[in-house]
Image (cartoon, rainbow, N blue to C red; front, side, top):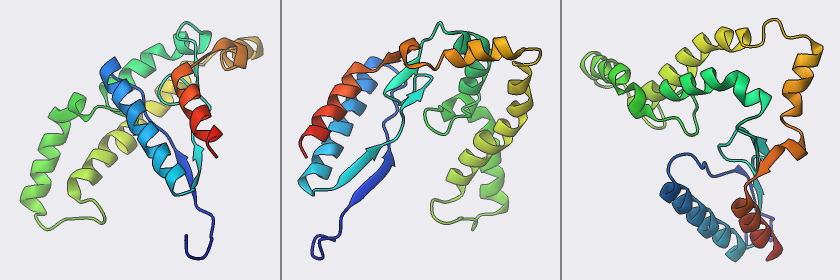
Length: 180
C-alpha cells in the first residue's frame, strides 16, 4: 500500500479495560504502542467505542445510574457465564467447557474448524451463542412493566452529562490523533 500511496485505515479496534488496575495499565500501554505503529506507518485509525457500561469506551454509564442498577443482576450473571465476547472470563465456566472439549477430542479427533480450531469454536458457541440465547428473554423481563417515563429515565443514563469519561484513554487517543 505504501508503494501505491493507497491510504491505510485501521477501523474499529479497541482495548478492553476490565480486570485489575495492573492489567488495565498494561492494556493502555499496549494500545499506546499500537497507535505508535499506526503513526509510524501513516495509517489512519478509528477507535471503536464511544459509550458503554464500563468495558472499553471513552465514556461509561455511571455505575449508580438507573440503567446499571436495573441490569445489575444480568451483568453479574453474564460475567459468571462468560457471555461477553470481550471481557468474558472462560475460567468461570471451565467446568462446563472441559467435558465438551473431551467429547470432541474423543469423538471427533480430526475436527479442526478453520481458522482457530475446535477449542476456539467450543469457547465461542457455548457462552456466546447458547448461553446468550438463553439469557435474552431474562434480560427482556428486567424491563417488563416500565411505562414511557420509566424507559426515558433509563435512557437518560446514557446522556453525555450522566456518563463518566475515561480520562486516561481520552488523553491517549487525543495525543495519538494530534500527531497526524
